[in-house]
Length: 393
Image 1 (tube, rainbow, N blue to C red):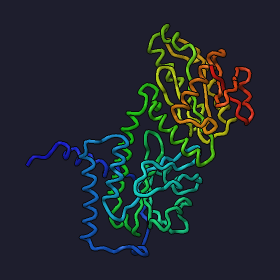
Image 2 (tube, rainbow, N blue to C red):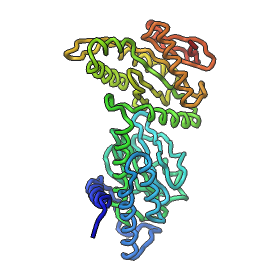
Image 3 (tube, one colour):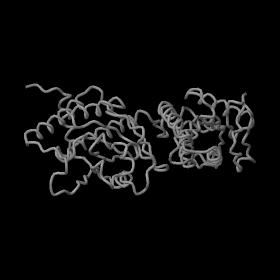
Image 4 (tube, helix red, strand yellow):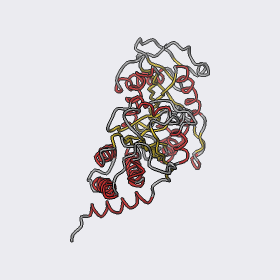
């Protein structure tokens, strides 16, 4: 009997997925929970077998990367049982403590974007690496679970790490006791498959030199942040940073020195910002910065920190100590109410205005085109909360 290579690979990966499943916290019960559906062993085994078969089908699929696979995983999870009617993953932001659901399948959970408390179950599980079953109607359930009352009976929360980012996979069922009845390994295997596919996606979506997200990821993050800002009323800053004098260093010392410099600069930019901000490499010596959950004064303070950090001399080993500066342009949404491409264009205009004004400074851009320059002497003093921004050049 001939067995296809894809099937063999699926069997191997499936075995790995089950073996690396994260630890589970089973709720301690002496009997079936109230309203739990009691089924025969044959029915339970049939459901369990069907879920495993869905995993096998996904692993044999020719699409084994990126968001397409994640969508396939969640769609397959809902098809695996009539009781499963929600699947998504959510990134847990360490700075802001916000659940940001992604690839939501089965039902809309926009209200899930809530700030988490340090004592919240989801936060604790992410830190401990353990999974848990949550009774949606329990009085001690996490505060954000209330949006599912009347729609679901229980949630399975499974934490995982994705390219260094903490995240949780959320699966919802309409039957009480469903996850304990079927068994946890199958559902944890789905989570591991999501983590694996997102890890592969991260490799393809990040700059190999600096390990920063690339242009595509930045645009996706920018669009997502703008959608959230319209609901929350927060500001979103879109920035473009370009190094001053990088070409001379690259030409004088060679590409190896230039690469080292870019790695140092990317690390310094990242450390100068909040954990919730996004830094991406657009190409060459140009970077993009996404400021989220900030007021204008916060954005300007971070601009100051970024410029001061980049301008600090760097030791490139055998190439000696070098110094570069940067020019930074930023525009604020929704004060600048454009789409992602327009916001990037305005930030780029502001960056070139900063270069034209003498470099080593930042500029903010607004639709009223009033000029404002954050000069070297002014950098220590963020501007007033009112929007006094940028310039056309």
